[in-house]
Length: 472
Ligand code: DOR
Ligand code: ZN
Image (cartoon, rainbow, N blue to C red; front, side, top):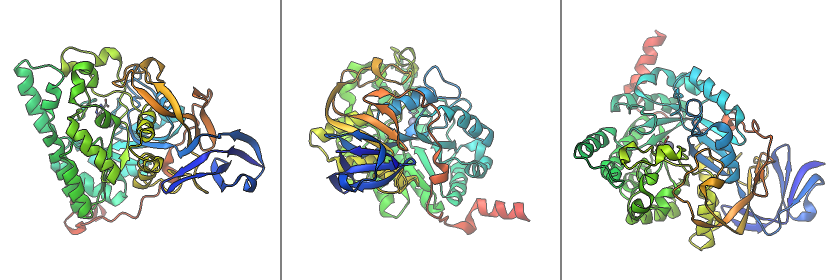
């Protein structure tokens, strides 16, 4: 007798769609196929008419705990994830304190005990914690985060020298480094000039962070990754321009992946008047030509995945007539799937394309494949049961994030996850959060399998010589 069978649904894989039942036992998928081949189960749930997608894997969320729990905490953040069909999140280190040492990682892990969905934890890669990176890897961070440009938390960006040594160390661990790829010095210079001239309207934010900051940062980081053999991931791709250094690096064989977020696909400079400071995010929302180019790159696979940069702030922190005083970012983990499914409903892409960018590719890039990111025998039963006909209107007051503000307010969506399962347990059922599941989420460290690391230029590596000197 197994635990559960989901009957009558349509299973979506990267290769296509098929009517099939899904059998689940001990949190894993044990069979996918015709109803008559399913083992006997303690529970059967009829999902006829619905699509079964692998739960989304969002490798870019900020859950704010410890330190900023008036914005979000692990309970509210993972409630929003569960409601949004997201079954695994990777959480960022710009909390207070930042996740930059083993002691601080333990503190983050303690906060994450409230998680309802599975999670990975980022360790910071910064100027002042180069000596901690190996210990962080050994203690179980799932990836590193490097802020090349400053943003919420005001963590200073490392010098290129420190970055290079950090990349050498990360290369030896095999863990991927996710990059906030905007060049700090250009932005600081421009914002100071704009502020000094008294320019403080919302579009000035774009002038302070023009696409050249992303082009320069992606190009530089890709060169450092190439030379060291570090694996890198470009977070929140916002511009047409940065697609070129990304494509060139991939063509050279650099282990580099890229993500974009819904705001760069669905919003443009035409929305700044209407949304005011609510739209402020780093990097900024840019022009329609950028959104068009990113859509093309997402569909061609140059941009590997969709993530959200879920960055909650309160309405008071977001709304300010002086753009420089508004906090950057907004919640997104709950709205990504309905927004993207709407494009599927309109015929822009297939569900198979969507599950590749929302689940399969993030699982592969961060070492969770084949255990996560797919519906198939042996995988974790992380499933978003989706009603492709369901129409909803996004409203901040109905979101589960503590941050009750969104630039997508009033937007109509078609298609929504009506149930979310994490390792076979319903964390969301019938569009309602299932109570009592704080603590169900587990860190993915024991299932994560990064391919063998392949550091390069070892003889010239600072890290190599320092390690030798330590050993002598
Ligand atoms: O707008 C942003 N907000 N961009 C980031 O990179 C960080 C985030 C935050 O933590 O608020
Ligand atoms: Zn972020």
